[in-house]
Image (cartoon, rainbow, N blue to C red; front, side, top):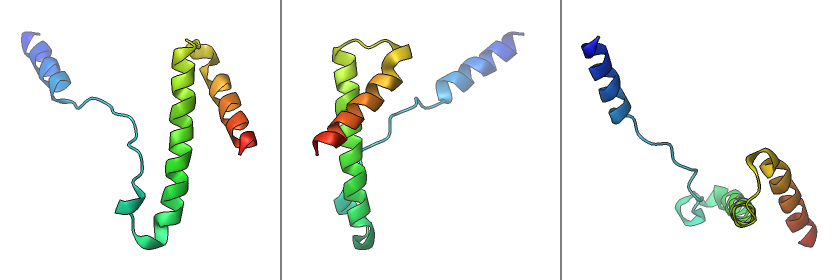
Amino acid sequence: MKSFIFVAAIALLATAPARSQALVDPSKVAPEYREAAEKRRAEQLRQRECAQKAELEKVLPRDRTAYLNHCLETMAAKQ
């Protein structure tokens, strides 16, 4: 039983932590895909901004999706 716990502990320590998706850098993308990369980066920035607003307003996890969707819709309407 001790060997099983030891192996499980080693397996947990060896795993890498999950990280969020990095922002797309259009300068590191092939020229034919640069326009799409710029659009993706703009969308990622809008999503991050809405997520930060949700954090500041302390939106509950159960309401977060609705809040983020509403925030993204209002940002799209402004543009």
